[in-house]
Each structure stands twice: as C-alpha cells, then as structure tokens.
Length: 237
Image (cartoon, rainbow, N blue to C red):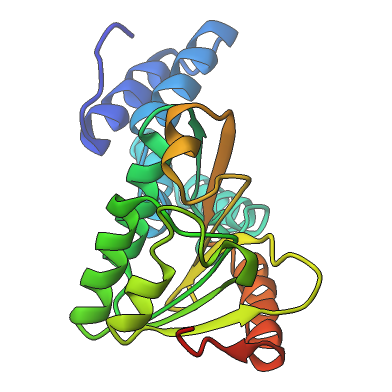
C-alpha cells in the first residue's frame, strides 16, 4: 500500500491490492480514504470508478449466481449514495490583512461573463476599481449599490466609476448601506466583512467567502434587486 496515486488507475491498483486477501483492514481503510480525499475522482468520474471496483470483484467469481449477486449489490449500493448532481457546491474562504482577499475579489470580477451586481459600503481600492472598469469595458452588465455618505471620502472611486458609465444607485436615507457582497452571473456570490478599501487589506482582520451554493446566491440576488429598485440613481453630484 506504499504506492502514491496520481490517477484513478493508480487508485484502482491500490484497491485491487487490498482485495488480494479478501480483507480490508482498518489501516488499509484509513489509507484508502486519505488517498481518495486527496486524489480521488468526483461527479460522474466517481460513478465510473465505483463501477470499476465492482468489476474487480466480479473478476474473482465465475458462476452466474455470484456475478448476479455482485451486480445486485452494485445497484443497491448506488441507491444509498447521493446523485452526482447533489455534490456540494464549491466554496472558498479568505482572510486579511494581506492580499488574499483583494486577489479573490479581482478574480471574481474577472470571471464574470455577463452580469456583475456589486453592493458595497464603499470602493476605494484602485486594484478593485481597475477590475470593475475592465469588466464594464468588456461588456459585462455592471451595477453598483453603495452608501451616499462615503461618496466624498478621500480616495473614493465611486464618481470615477460613474463617469465611466457604470450604473450606480445610492442609499440616501439616514441609514447606512453597509453590505459587502457581489453576485456574478447569478451563479456565485462573494460576501464577508471585507470592505473594498486599501486599509482592509493592509491593517484590518477581515473575512471573505465565495460560494456557488444556488440557494445562497438566489437570496443575495433577490436582496440586490430589492435594494436596486428602492434606492435612487446616483446623479453625479
């Protein structure tokens, strides 16, 4: 069991060796579980790998009743597992102070293909502003919701974005629009405590979460639409 797998074929070899004595010891099980977690296939590839494992067992038996029993076990086993489409959505977590969060925001903006809805307290980090402008220039439908009290802060880039043609709505109420989230193409959401400012990356202890969980994305998209329709357009004052 010392072989380090680099492919599903290598993993299958490990299972095949384990089956040689018809015994799966606790140590072997721990080793195989670790290798599957590190190198194992996912989704439809995992279903095919399971089928190959049952094929390994079928090779050992020659009688039709035995083969039929193994085929029944494979089919019954598949019923106990979640379908491939129920695989947990991908999520990522980042923390500051450092550039991990701003780098994640930049990648998130770059990956937007058609629509990007941004709802943040303020935008003053030029690295993020440059990515927003680039997205706008390549044709991404960009909408920005922000707080009116931060418009005239030193370093604020909101008016620069407005001058470039980005659609902006602001909260002119006595309350603060204190959100920090963005939704890309209705498929992924970025959120957390992280303000889109230089100080957040240099000094603050902040967090950032990116997820493709459809239920979470749907809730954030609905909240953005609610706020967009209720808050007025920025007039460029």
